[in-house]
Amino acid sequence: MSDNFQLERERSSLSSFPDSKSLFSKLKSGLLPYAFLTPTLIVVTLFFFIPLVMVFILSFTNLDMTNFGILKWWQPANWTLDNYVKIFTNRFFPRILNNTLMYVSMTLIFFNVGMALVIALITTNINRRVGFTFRLIWLMCRLTPVVVYIMMWKALAGPAPMGVINKHILGPLGIGTGEYLLNTNPWLFIILVNGFIGASFGMIIFSSAIEAIPKDYMIASKVDGASTWQTIRYITIPMIRWPLLFVTTYQTLSLLTSFEQILLLTNGGPGLYETEVWSLTAYHRAFSSYFGNTQWGYGSAWAVVLVIIGIVMAIVYLRVFKFNELIQEPKIDQL
Image (cartoon, rainbow, N blue to C red; front, side, top):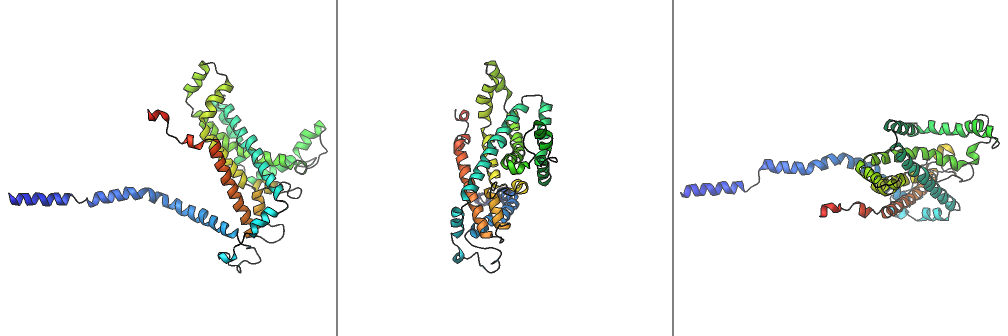
C-alpha cells in the first residue's frame, strides 16, 4: 500500500511540471506575430526612423557642400538654431506659407475631397457598369507617368498656335491673346494638375464605403419620404465618417509634402517664389539651391517645420471628426 501511495505521489509531482512540448507551442504562438512583424520593423527603422532622426539632427547644423566631410554634424557642439531663425526671418517666408496654405486648401476642398465625394456619390447611384467605367477612366491620370502627365498639361497650356486651349477654345471665342497660360494663370493649372490625381484616390475610397452601406438604410429613407439630398446628408455622410477622416488627413499630408508636379510644371515660378510651396522650398534649399550650394542643414530645417505642421493638422482633423467617438464600442454591445 505504501509503495502504491509513493508511486502516485511521484506521478502527481511529475505531472505538475509543464510539458516541454506544450511550453514550446505556447512560446511559438507568442513569438510568431513578432516574427512576421520583424521584416517590416527592420525596413521602417532603416528607411523611416533613422532618416527622420538624421534629418532632425541635420536641421540644427549648417552642413552643406562646402563643409561636407569636415563638419562633424552629429556632435551637439555643432548644433544651433540658426537655420530656424533664418526660416522665420526670411522675407519670402509669408509668401511661401501663403502659397502652401492656398495650394493645400483649394486642392483639398475642390478636388481631393470635394470632387472625389461628388464622383463617388454620382457613380454609385447610376448604372453600375457605367459608374465603374467612369471611375476607371478617371484613374488614368494617376496611372500615367508624372513626366508624361505634366507634358500633356504643358501642351494644353502652350501659347498659340500650338497650345490646345488657346487654339481650340480661347481663340475661337476671341478670349486672350494666345499667351502661355502657365505664365498668366499658374495656380489654376497647378490646382487642376494635382486635383485630378488627388480626386481619383478619394473617389475609390468613398465609392467602396458607400457601396458597403446596407441597402436597408436607403430603402427605409425612401419609404419615409426622404429626398436624395436628405439621404446623402443624414445617412450616407454620417456612415462614411471614417473614410472621410482618412482621406482628408492622408491627402492633407500628401499635399503638404508633394512638389514633383509643381517642380515639373513651373519650378516655383514664373515670378520669384510665385508658386513656391513649403516642400518645394525644402527641396530647393537641400538639393538645388538658388544660391549655388546644396544646404542640407537648412533644407532639413524646412522639412522639420513641415512635419510639425502636418502633425498639428492631423490632430485638428482628429478633433473635427470626433475621433474618440469613432473608436468607441457600439452602444448595442453595452445592453
